[in-house]
Length: 316
Image (tube, rainbow, N blue to C red; front, side):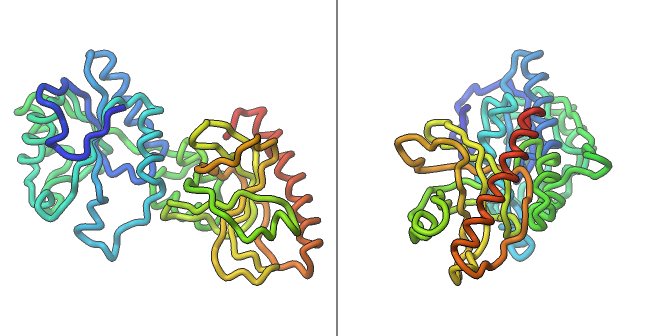
């Protein structure tokens, strides 16, 4: 997949394209539906399926005090887009200057002249241009003049709840990661480097991989059934993960510690992604490391049964 980090990076003669536009701060089930629509329509028309998104998030420029914490890292977003059939992404640099573009200027310079869009897909509540002056009706009229078709996609529901990034953030913050998984269309996941811990787990409880997460949103503290992937080799393991402060050892800093339920291999992963499948229990303090180890082994049993059950339904 090609990634363009500025308008100038898009080569002359690029396209024709079918374009999805949005912030896509967490590529959730609604976003995936739009992207699948882009990929299908582009295949039908012999065009390039493209995502146009913004970096940084517009709220960080226009109202930083209200800017949302992003559900995914940029790498996670790009991998999710590629998985839905997107072949090129324009990371439109958002700045005070670009915020002053009128809807017409944005549509003409970016969609028509740069991406040579044949069709544009957006969510039904899409707003764009200076002071968000443009909406789907505006873009439809502009498309008629500039030569592209507009498709406004309705939001989707999961078990009666509207799928939204803000809703997913609330679910993750309360530990409801299984519900977040339904909203996202994939497990909520943290990614980052494996860092050296204090060696307490290896000596007194169980050996773990200590993740330095790059994500802005973290789950509620507690113990989870997880799925861990080595981002370099692609190896995967069922796992159990503790997010918390290690109160048994008087910890002060938040840690994300993952115990692999399978054989890790000869080399320790350097970068991992940990997908959160089910909440198991709250973090709590134990009187001794031995008592904690006994509880961890119980947790492993619970997680193993959950993984076996989820495997039957191909979850995670």
